[in-house]
Image (cartoon, rainbow, N blue to C red):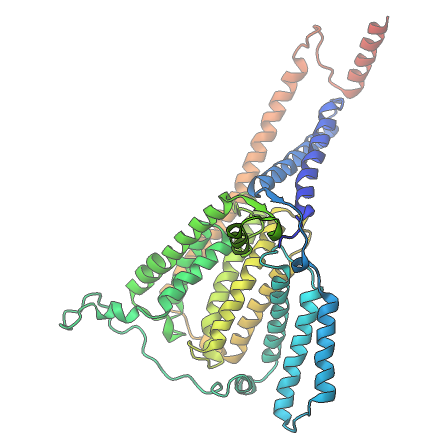
Length: 499
């Protein structure tokens, strides 16, 4: 049940260093002309080659080695003809043998569902594979097609009026399309309530609901997606600040201080991030040796092999390095922004489309992002870390970004009055201060500091160049100040050796 090892990553990993080494050898073996223009050009090329070699070496160090015996069984083959035959038989049955009901609404629903299923069958068998192959590439192709369907559904909702869009949800669930009841949030925030003699800690026990394990599991999965402790903690803390800032818009953002920082950040989110990091450490250390199921002699080994089918085929350790250059810094800021926007969309969509928090559509959306988010983050990381090989953003990452933006546009269209509620002045001051500090650090780190370092390096080279020219060589002569004189000197030495 193994898939043959993909050669693309290994070829890219080993060909780039070889090319870099050859280029470095050519640069080292070339004759120094002594001309400032040519020397600066050679130095620039050498710097680019050195940087490319560093990136290739860094990429290889973050990837694990994979050993695969190359077994290609029925499980891994593309069953395009089989799926086409089954689909044709189903359509023939519906056309010739099944009587079409006279209910227009029912036929409309059934036609839409059948169209989606046909598209999913096409996508699962014909769509391009993504970076993940376990448990099966068809599984990730299925979620890619679901992503397309969900984006089209959001576009349809976006082009409806507010009333029609909310009433359209009744076609999915007749219980939807009605305003949500008012609920009381916040309330008594005492950790120990002396007025309640029966249970003074009743406020804490009231918060122990189904959302506690949901928070833990959610941040455990997000850690597996992002694969970085700092980014996870920043997103976790930033979202709590967003809840503080927007509690005047959505009542369910109004929570007690200990619910924000103790229950959410430290207990639920922090424990989920910790367990996620431990899982990442195990995945980065485990050996990735794959053997065909029928090549394993023992039943215990076969069962273990089936269980490991649901683990990654290989592993790449994410090293975002946001401070290394401006491109990566802006990319990391964009990732954090999109994560926070997707989190906010969860609450705002429920509010504007009148969906209760416990509705199954809310859960399905979270399951959807769990399966889509991991692929999207891997594609974003590949696009950032290896732009020469991944020349364009991955398809799942592109769709995930489009979905996040479309969801936010639905919120803006359906309830602009809520979004336009004035933010408290002290909250705006805090956000302006934070944005200003980020801008100041960005300008200092990637502009002022780099310009200063370049100026110092140029000045140091100018001071060292005359000393190198006047420095005597091993034969007692001095270095030639020009490329022509050095070339002539080399020719005279060659004639002297021949004579």
